[in-house]
Length: 257
Image (cartoon, rainbow, N blue to C red):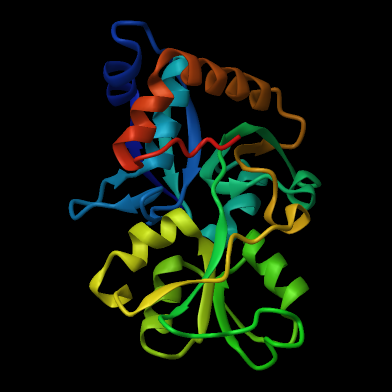
């Protein structure tokens, strides 16, 4: 695995979020992805942006710690955390019982629906019986993998290392459908030229055992940092920092109920 320190966010976080308050010297290393807009993406100059990135910087500023963002492909996120390549993950990671066996989570920092996407006018049946032979693509190691393996086990399931490749194959006709976060799908695919002939199919998917109970910040098992980050998220929800980040990317509150 290749690990790269993308940005030291001391000045960004401090200036944007806590004014002149001092930042502690010890950095907080946060694993991020950079290929899941609008939650995280790489700009033309190589810098990272997106809701996850802003939340990561805001957490560091709230904790008065320097932020080091470490870019990591999705399917290596938890192994890299456990091996201490970074201290926390802010990468749209859903809180699930299966993941709780390996890591600890903060409280959620957002919760949005999961849905399928296919060609406009498609009438696919995503039941166990109806999905036999359907070519479904998704990001490897996600809650979506749990969902399709459980609910559409006879589909032809293709796993990918990044979301952009899923959309590329869907647009090229190599997939019949894909499954992902609905908000990410609008920004990352449906609003683009490549996605103009595609749309959501079916309603919001409901399976808490697979899809989790919202998105949280992952830390190593039983690390007290989880509680510190939860406190920071609560403070951000109260002091307007969360709303500022939310409103930068979304026309509604993505925190959920």
